[in-house]
Image 1 (cartoon, rainbow, N blue to C red):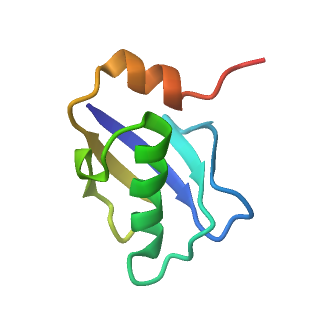
Image 2: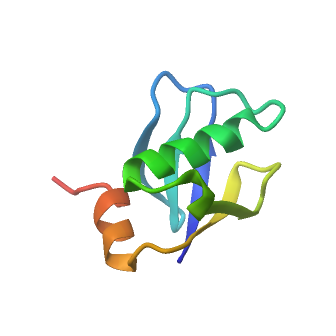
Length: 88
């Protein structure tokens, strides 16, 4: 499954904020330097989905705020239920 992500580095918390321009907006505390934000994104998604980091790969936009992420070995329904922000 592929997920389009908008990363906001140097935030006060690591969390999923909303869907923005058809992308999942994720705040990360890591700075966008030396791949730290990318590593933090992979770690965050792996933690949220309870999977290994090896199952997550940034396939586009590694040097950009707008990234495309491939998640392998996880049913799409599980990804959607765990990652999409719940509307209140």
